[in-house]
Length: 392
View 1 (cartoon, rainbow, N blue to C red):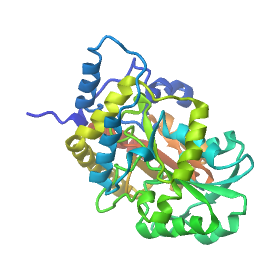
View 2 (cartoon, rainbow, N blue to C red; view 1 turned 180 degrees about the horizontal axis):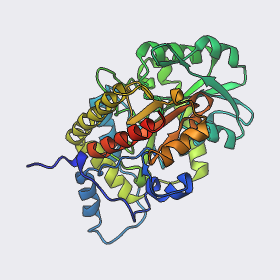
View 3 (cartoon, rainbow, N blue to C red; view 1 turned 135 degrees about the vertical axis):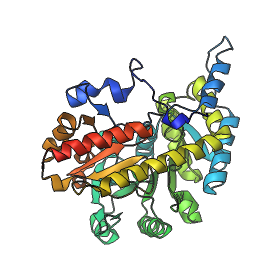
């Protein structure tokens, strides 16, 4: 019988895995199942690891440049999966999306300029703006009656000024799981173009999208938006490769690319590590079949949570359109944010990400990472259910 690689239980203890090593620091105990930080408790593809092992047969581990073949593998992936034709000169290496975010902010704005961040969102968006001495414009996303979060462009128009230079977009959205529609992205893009606001688009979750939804790269929507967008991408989420510290930045605009490259060279983060280059190229060049299996597994986990949520009335859940993150509405439990966090730790024995950490609009919510074997998810949901029953 063939083993399903996505359901294999893996012991990550002793590996310095952030998700596990920080349990006591974050939750006050290591007796919790950690389902917070966004990496997968699923093995990195074997073909990627084999490529790395093969490279280790060579005895010299010196400086290496990122080869064109690695970029071409990524270009081919985006052509196949996103109908986006990228050019080699548009792409450059970065150690991470967060590093790219800071570089883009410094390259495309000045100290004191305003940067739009949407609430709730991945916490480094806020921190990177503040650390670079820019002014935050926090735009609260609006949750409609069906639980769908949307841009409020009328409100945003009242928030921006002549000093607003950048909009940080999370697409697909972490933690909400939204996959923005063409209509939404085009309206937001037109808003920015009309006001001379550049878009820095974090698209690291772009491959993790569930049918019938489709990820639309911001740079693919029009020629004007292509020239107005800095796109942050990479294999870390799709292939569970965050530990390789490799991503790329795609900037079609020659003007924006020159400004970004000048800042990147000033930071001098180089071309990355040779084993990362090997893993990157292998992931994109040979990943289609593994990726299809992963998406089938994650889609099954989405349905597992939905079935569980429909069996109880305490926690609200809307199926994510993308990502492997569940945004759990816990407000009917009637707890404050600190009490809610402690409840999940002490009663459910789960280490989740508190919604308030993603911004004020996240109050009363919790984020659960479901990129785990099915049995792990089922046990976590059972534990959560028992804890909830104990409150009734």
